Length: 248
Image (cartoon, rainbow, N blue to C red; front, side, top):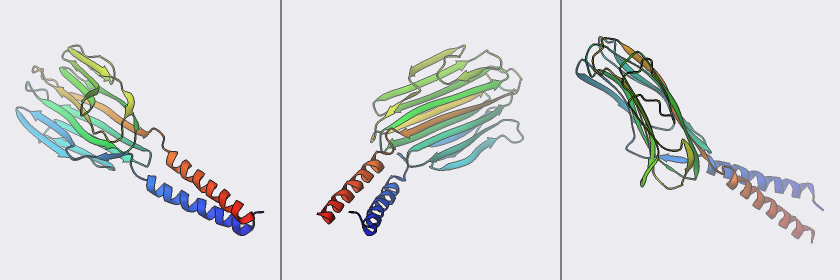
């Protein structure tokens, strides 16, 4: 027969294992590796300017490069976060290029290099919209050490107010779509995620052009609660064994 002391003891064992397991699993399911870079670039009237920062987890900031006296600029807002089961990389873009010189450009490029600590599901999404004319380019790819898992680029040269959605082939000049926007990444394998979005005056039109866009990479552990449930099961088995010994 279970006494109040025995019940209290079992709850204590289960509680301690729950806390210890939660502590062990309270970490991001990926490790960020060195070599990543987040860049905003402008070229106005033949002169290049750039601002760059390194990706971190978490990261909640805005990076901007602007030409003085303007009007060209490229700005990216990063919302990178993680918990014990997931990691999310979200980028919001805002750009403007001056329409006065062939080759003027406003561009956002990013490289994130990471290694999952457990198998994770990935999902990639994004869009890019231009208001104006001339060239619009949008590319996102994901690769491991052996090759591409996903690659999508869309390139337009003459469509007014162009709009791209990731995973489609909307460019009037060139398109590539390889792989899937969702799948599984293997623990211990290094992956590289790259995005590149720009508007370019090509050739000169004399019209200022702006653009906005979003890119998201979401990662989620495939079986996030296995270690917690298995530890609790072991704890309950221990309590059952202990109680049988006490009553025998």
